[in-house]
Image (cartoon, rainbow, N blue to C red; front, side, top):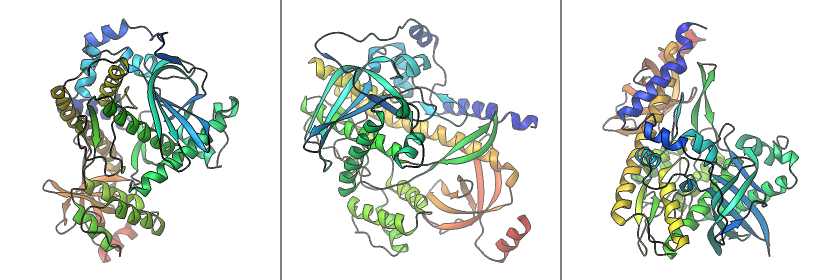
Length: 503
């Protein structure tokens, strides 16, 4: 291993910290936050009539293999007549991070954990998010529980929220659970050793599929975007691999979407405002229509989620290998989500991609500040107290959280681009197949398929639009700035001869 290669992680970490600062995010905790954190003990579960004891329920968590900042647990039990009672427990982060504390101020500034290829910048100190406010295995913790009665047809006729003491009986990982659910792997971890966990997961999986079916009937989009993940060999960047969806990830996603919907409706019923997560109708619907037309399909002239979902399902079956690329193009053309204040009786535009009207973020308070804000609103409602945030406060929070989420995404993308530039540095002059992913006044962007890397078109981009497949040549990289430059090289003799020379 040469010295330059050995500095891959070090260099990417330095880039990440620089970009965090440039984007107005704080990479480090202040001395006040460190001191405040050191003074905290583990949260004791209160013993009163408002706190239910649910430690005996067979709670499980499913997350990434290396995740320790566990925000939620899930549990399900038959409720008669084919229905299932599903409970989602959300870590009571507010119990140790009160409004107005130094820790709260840091979390409220960054508003989210930032996950870069070389370093994670947690929203909360790790001794909290991965321990004292985490729903770790075998740890008794306070939680906010969302309870839902889910019928066989996926409808949710009853729901409730309350505080409870919970205990995680099995910390599980997406990949192992997914393989087992699909009959392609052995029972992972405590699925094999704790009685009842296997049946618990299968019941949750059935409920999740019923919930998902209803959403897709209403037009929820079957998008399959895949993100590259940096793979290191020690401190050396070795590869970029795709992080794909699987059945276990979908299980948790479906339960959390349902829980977030219940939370939004609960606050509405209690007469409290909420921070809604909204995605408006696609900004460039006409281009989505054109994409469909290019594939021999017809979409209506006005945005129609159900019609778009039918088109996506058809394309997934017709061309599964290229479906992620089509999904990426549609995501780019739909625009970004945002936070918006919803007052009781208001008219939220809802979330176009999820096909839900009532939707907030509440299930990840260790990682997202809007979820912590929502948790405080819920606790106020449960205690019969006034909302801890006024309308003006929430409107400013909605704006700030949307802005900082965008900044965090830009940090993650820029560091990912620096990692990709490091990986591609030796391959300048080679040709790749790709797809145009964005066209704006700032430039035209392409994603090559192998390795899965995004770059800017600096030559021959005139007339190209989102969704078009192209052959490009890598002409330059800049690791520090995360720049990867491509030139359009249409298929032809020059391309063929280049292929022969590189083989």
